[in-house]
Length: 163
Image (cartoon, rainbow, N blue to C red; front, side, top):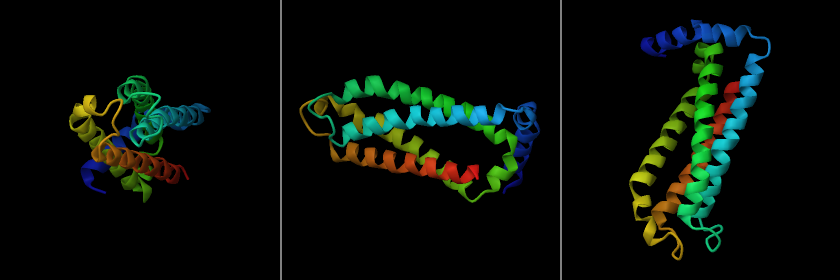
């Protein structure tokens, strides 16, 4: 592990946050529970939106309507997961970062972020052409599959970090 990263991890671990999470009788399991609920709030609506891009419910709901109602829920879940994830990491930052699954989880989160940016700054700009009556273009479907696979990988890697 690079010295700079190790220094940041030690600072996080030795912080009052890290000490509090480590020493609080119920804080770690409460944070872990909230983290899991945040994952559900992040991934559930994201997968539902991805399924819409892949054709599910095409005759029932437009892509823009699905985005308007589902993506803000995912954003809230992301906020919860980020905050609780940092708090959970603070308890044993150097141990967690040294785990084999850590680079996988971080790398997949980066891929997920890039996928979101590429989708929203790229193909989604043409959504008016395929919002209701036309099937989403191949690029939208590829983005949906990347999302499903990458978030599944993040969840699996996270479970490997927990044990």
